[in-house]
Length: 101
Image (cartoon, rainbow, N blue to C red; front, side):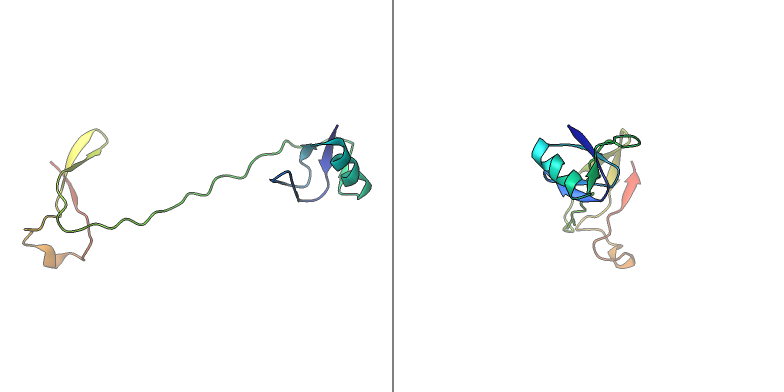
């Protein structure tokens, strides 16, 4: 049996919103209906949609002795942070410069 929830509620590890259709075991659904948290009329109900995954930002640290190149849209670019860069005083510490080759 499927029910339509009338309130936001976590069920079976999922965060359902009011109006979502929920299909779980019969005793849970009967309890939700008797507690006035859900109804058996599915009219206008919406499917459960998992919340979007939060993007996690990871801080990156670098040293001044970086060498090599980075692929950027199919083009190799030069990393201008080098230990012998004579113009580093003009730039903040930790700045990564990328310039076309």
